[in-house]
Image 1 (cartoon, rainbow, N blue to C red):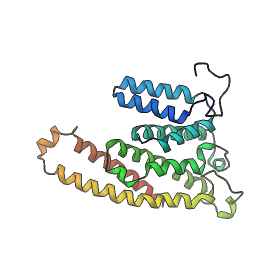
Image 2: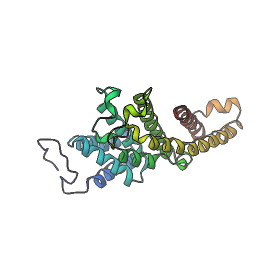
Image 3: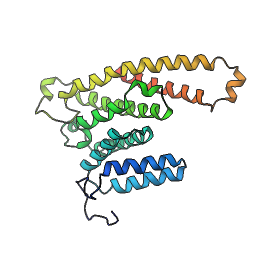
Image 4: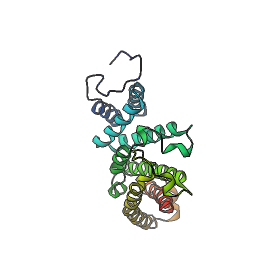
Length: 239
């Protein structure tokens, strides 16, 4: 693994090791060390390795690690990397051409895999890392749903229907997006219940105590729930 290939690699078995498991181990180990320097080292190794691969292989690697890891901070980081990869791919593409783009980043199976891991209502009430994972998944869903709506705004289905495509931006996959939007209703109920519960606990403190406790877990979690609810409101507007 020490010699750098002369061209981008399209094969995740190039180094004769299960690369998704290796990268999961590197990121998890760096995260568990706790220090910012160690975390940065793990991310640096990840970025150095993933930069050797083609876009197709990068997407396969990211989505496979997300599917297999139980380390929520790793998944949250990779979802943000995935979203950045989509944005980088689409930055020079007009909305009219996105649905025709043959990019692995927009394949239904990869997006579905990522949303299935992140958009669980239980993620809202477990650890802060799980709530962050949920937040990353919701932000990805908002971005992609808005892109889908903008692409097909004002067009009749007869103008858009074409060959069946795995590109999630094709109108053929409208039900796919509606399904995930419907699934967020359960998440929203859980988040709203947590907001009420947290607010009730916070109201037990005096104003003076509240000022001194802004960095305490209960206040941080309350703010986290409020941000989640704002994102869920944006998704409701897209239904």
